[in-house]
Amino acid sequence: MDDLRFTPTMKTLNNEQLDALHSATLSVLERTGIAIKHPKALEIFDGAGCKVESGRVRFPPDVVEKAIASAPERVSLGNRFNNSEISLEGAKTYFGATVDCVNYLDPDTGMVSECKSNHVEVMAKLCDRLDNYEWTMTLGIARDIPENIADRVVARIAMEHCSKPVIVSANDAESLKEMYEMALMCQGGVENFMKAPLMGTLNCTISPLMYDDHLAEKDIFAAENSIPIVHYSGMQLGASFPASLAGGIVMGSAESLSGLVLQQAIKPGAPFVFGSFITIMDMKTTVFSYGAIEMAMMVGGMSQLAQKYKLPFFSTAGCTDSKSVDAQAAAEGSLQDLIMASIGGGLVHDTHCWLDHGSILSPGHLVMGQQILGMVKRFMQGIDISDETLALDLIDKIGPGGAFLMEPHTMKHFKEVFYPEIFKRTKAQAPGTVLDEKFSDRLRVKTLDLINAEPVNPLPEELSRDFDNRQKRWMAI
Image (cartoon, rainbow, N blue to C red; front, top):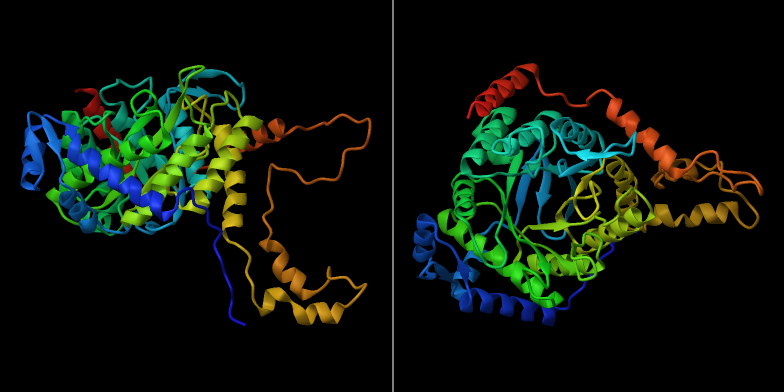
């Protein structure tokens, strides 16, 4: 018998719903359009066949469809060693963590403080060591660094202390240029970068339906240099987007596709990643909810749109509104992980790195996520059906009342089971006794051990010195 394999799948939308969402997206782009003032971008949009009038750009459906058709179905990202780590296409899923945030939760003391550059370094090293995270992302937040260069410094830390692909957020095109040059230094030049870029960039519209000049300039620079770009929006239903789930998907899709038109008009075939970060405003608290099930529903729907368009996708999972690494964080995060893995989340960001609706950076949450993602990835392998795994001859050999423990077949297959490190499977606690070790204790010890371990992929010293000199130049700006 040939091996019979099936990857578990999930859908939140059927084909008729996807067609309706696509039609509505085209309607928003054609009827409402986007507001933008950047002269060069307006010129590019006009040359692509858009209707440009009084700082408003409207997109005929054929222009949008042409841009979708010209974009590559696959975007590759590589590591510092010029190995292709990520082949982003179809329903493939790669989980990544953001290494910076507004605040930081110390895994030893449990105290929350402002996020500083040494905290970013801790997270970058952890991401490099934890193999269930395939990539990293930066937002440019380090409160001990001047705000005008913090984006560059955080990107430098990520590239220096984590060898995996990184998606960077840049303040402007000049910062993006500096980050691009550092990626070229790490990879040994443009030729290696073009094969499997170490770095992509994140560009976010101002919802609803607006571009600022910096966004347009970064889009243009990324397209001209073939830097993979995630053009997305981050919004709350009922605030910057309509309160309905369908309306949120349509607006998110429209904002992302507007960036695709600009980029493909500059360089047809330039690498582009479709996506939008959509969640609800919790009307009880006004919180931008990271743990809402509706977020997973909408992001899952947009993932299906991406697959319909044959565009690589950027999504979100492993998130929580909890203030600590607790049962709420595990429940919200793991449900999102499983949904995005089974729908096909593409480049999944913010995975198990943040607490408190995206305001606290947490090494402990990252380490717990390593265990959760291990289970999710094991589930996604499905069940292998073959002559070997059906084991009919072995079953007949052992027969009624026998035992399989000492059989070679058992020795061959028992390691296929997922064995967690910090989720314990010890025997039952004796009645009347008190637990001498809790999950939180094991997580704390494991996290601190990983933080204090030697780096696995240190940057060559000469490159670190070059980065130091570059940062000194930034500080003088």
